[in-house]
Length: 224
Ligand code: DX5
Ligand code: ZN
View 1 (cartoon, rainbow, N blue to C red):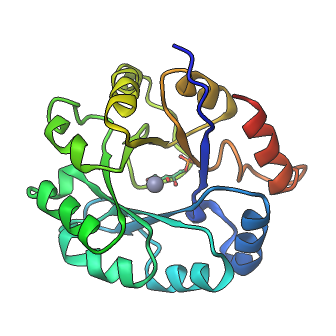
View 2 (tube, helix red, strand yellow):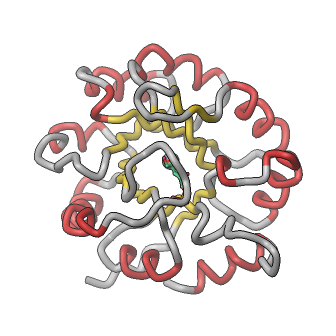
């Protein structure tokens, strides 16, 4: 299948250098990315802690880009108003973290954000398909959530192929998260994936010799 749609690129702020966070945000904004992906972790749903109110406020101070908030937390319904008030434009909850995901997705829409559903690598389409018409955004994990810098899980490919077709039908953005590199971006875009979280393998790879963000982003856009 040939998808000619442009790709959306969402750098994960988790992977930036937090010692110079304001500069990182300014540079990413100038590089022409489409939104900033914010990985929120609560130490319960995933075995790690990351990105709360302070990071959201710093982002709001230094960029006008949309904030794409990925809630890796238990009981996400309790924090929709909280993250919306902090400036979240898209809020993705994990299907596995919420027994009433339909209600929470509706709530996200009510507060004026784009409702997103994140699914773990092991979560099947069958278990979430009724929720898809409620989503503006589907965030398919290609690593187990909790840490940057892991390896891509190849068993997710079959699911991405099916979701790619469904994205076109339902009109949601299909975003992949975890271990995206340039080759994977090309491969998954051909399956109908139209948004990519950029982490350690595509944008924030170890220095030295790393080109400026603007240069990397320009090259990534030329890939498809
Ligand atoms: C994983 C996070 C990802 C991650 C991206 O739990 O949701 O956004 O930080 O980093 P890489 O691309 O290195 O996997
Ligand atoms: Zn994420």
